[in-house]
Amino acid sequence: MNKTQTPARQATGAVRRRGRPHGHPQTKARIVAAAEPLFLEHGYRATTLRAVAAAAGVDSALIGYHFGSKRGLFGEVTQIQCARALDLTRAFTGSREGLADRLLAVVTELWDAAEVNRLAVENEEVMRAFREYLEGEVLARLAEYLGGHDATRRALAAVTLIGGLIFTRYLNPLPLAAALPSEEIRRTLAPALRAALAPAAGGPRTARATRPGV
Amino acid sequence: MNKTQTPARQATGAVRRRGRPHGHPQTKARIVAAAEPLFLEHGYRATTLRAVAAAAGVDSALIGYHFGSKRGLFGEVTQIQCARALDLTRAFTGSREGLADRLLAVVTELWDAAEVNRLAVENEEVMRAFREYLEGEVLARLAEYLGGHDATRRALAAVTLIGGLIFTRYLNPLPLAAALPSEEIRRTLAPALRAALAPAAGGPRTARATRPGV
DNA sequence: GCAGATATTCAACACTGATGAATAAAACCC
DNA sequence: GGGTTTTATTCATCAGTGTTGAATATCTGC
Image (cartoon, rainbow over all chains, first blue to last red):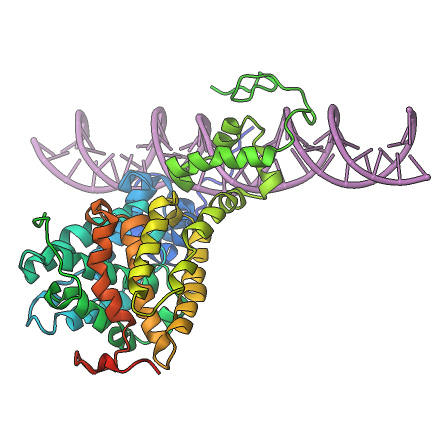
């Protein structure tokens, strides 16, 4: 007659009474902490909310309550990592000559340390954030740093290369690109990045900059 | 509100008897044809097998029967497009001097024409195929074409830039990169790609690069 | 103490992709 | 040209997903 025999057996096996427990004031943080390794190991799709809830020792409905949706939780988990992994401020302080090397150093350092590898590409929201950051932040600031009427185009070329580095080494890692030590990667890409950043005067084709920077 | 009373009402509304119908010998092709626009418009995740089956006017179980799984169907739909979009053979026939320009031309032409934009990044299988192609095919052949002991490194730099182009313009398009006409993109990236392909001797930026690749 | 806000639990819901049993159509064999 | 086998299709159902609403327990302000 009664289907609810086990009153509240969470995955941990610990029996918890209904209602708000006394000793767990920050469930939200615990959910995030539990979700992070799961997302990192299994990716977005394969990580279920029930698994997260079980790992955190909470009811799965709490995720919806605190984060609205699975997307909200993922956004909460990766937002900080994304922000941390994309902070290029350091590269923009210093001489113009070492800009390419500083950019490569910052990118490889941050992304080597970041644990956002591979999984972000699955999530539309993260990709959108990444896109907006790459264009609205990196490209814009880089163009401003470079200056000149051709700055936007040079910044675009640089962002393309940097995006390719992040893509082929971290988000969708080619075995070769991922295996090389970062110092070697930097040395490999430095000439191309310097060429991308260099004013087009020395190039074979004169670049008629028609578009004022947007 | 789905009580499943109507015995066999497919999406078309046409009542079909059980068993193999006489006039539809190529259901497989029809499923692929119906799936393609759906995948392209809504992406992988948001396209349900039931919607594909309804659009094709067949039972949803037929997809499993013919393609094994949703992945199988997606692979069937995108495989040809991927192969079509990644055929770089043309770029490898010709003089060494124009290599960079030919590469950029082929990549932009093929990807501008391809309709694989944006959705491929959602699917792990497509990304794996793309990865393997980029490293196993493009990079390997490019290194062979370039020759010399430094060839692999230069090819890697070039592949990084090309991958960045595909990523920031097609797979996860930055507004600016996607808005520019392809001819301008080519002009923008040409110097960097030439520098990537050039036999850099490791020096900072000196013109020791006149030496042809051994 | 008590009213309202907040957090938590439970139970369902609508869907999803997948699969097994039953069956009709076609092909094949002699 | 009937009998058998193979293939294609239908139907029903499964386990599992993210999400949501109702009920309940705890905390907070007065």
